[in-house]
Length: 417
Image (tube, rainbow, N blue to C red):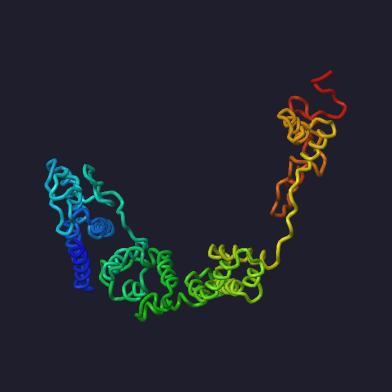
């Protein structure tokens, strides 16, 4: 079964290669159809093969809609076959994969149909063909067809990052020059093209070869790697290339931080002066400024790093422990009146008195004991006469009557005698 799966992948790759650069969608779809049919013939226990089949059908649906429709129809028809079917075990498996017992097993017909994702268990209907494939790639949609071709051609294991030849030989080279495989990044998706090229640079590839070796694309890449003018907008490609020069200092900084987590002196040697972290920060800052990206979101990470560096090197003022002066006054008053319990904890009734008479009453209304009506911090200078600072002296709660109205000096209240 594994040999059949490997053969299917090899034949699919050879078919794509043999179609040549002059191939049409029909040629490409013929390769896909043969590949999908062969994968579908494998036993349901080969879940990886069926997952690849589903992923291939989904990723080529735009170019080969007939294949997608045919697979959906085949699966729909399979679910309406007679109630049971005898399914013989594969030659290299000791038991029937869906039944779980030795020898051939009678299982519901739905079990014969490979489910999208996990293989169908006995008695469980196959998942609809519209379900999301279990295995998908994270490549941008504009390079999907070429990336799938590359993955099959290189037999790229799941989770393994592509090599530099994905960009130089496939995306921007001859290996994906067929119309059905060409990338569609560019004018229609400039941000995707940026992401594709930045991924190439971040992989560690030579930035000058990220768009292949043809003169036209090499010139285009060279223009993207040129330092932008002072008045130009952020050049992410230039920044990514410049930031690669900081990798050595980044690794050294990470190692020192890991070793000196609780050693302030070691952290100072890393972040201050000519330490590795200081060099790394300077390198990234230089890349941001040179690429005109210091005001973009790319600078968010550096801002956090710089604040950490400042705290380590310049130090922070010692934080004064917080004290609730109002509560201290309340407890002192209770103790003076011999009303405080031996353990120093107020009773529920006394707690109510605290909030009524101290927090929101007159006992803590004077600074520095005042605990309410703290003015909001204004981070921007204001020239308006209606600023919040003009309203920080709110009415003392003790000057309100029972309905909440302000009691003017000398006026009688509605309550009391």
